[in-house]
Image (cartoon, rainbow, N blue to C red; front, top):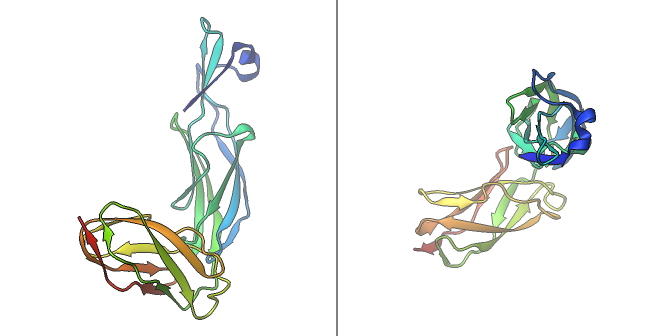
Length: 216
């Protein structure tokens, strides 16, 4: 992605007609996530952005495309924000362990902060249930009510993995955040036939719906 600025910024920004210095990740806050709790994070990135001067249009174009990841999860808007502070919320699908934080810019430069983020054990429900689902049509969104069951159910506010078997396609693959142990999720199944919606968390606890029919 590019961002245009008036040419009067030239003296402040400079031009990227040579090699630019490496990007740097200076901080990750917080550095620890409880596995069962969605966690807002901030990643501070310092970089000199590539720029091109359009003298005829009296403007400078900055390349601001940025992909920021903590382990396999991507955060941020996909562009380098003013001040370089990337915000995002990690959902509860990261396995226990320690992860690198990586920033990749559209000009190919990368910044890596090794072993900068750790996921520690959380408190999960014992299982899940799914309210009865009526007959559906392939490709048409519908609501599914997911419920945490057993231990820690009433306080659960995490995310779970969603799946249907038998070759059908389900979106989304990850639920939104539960509220006091309940989540009403809008899902779409592509693929006809009898289906079962399965709910699983990263600790291995699961549940499923009764079979329901999806027509073409």
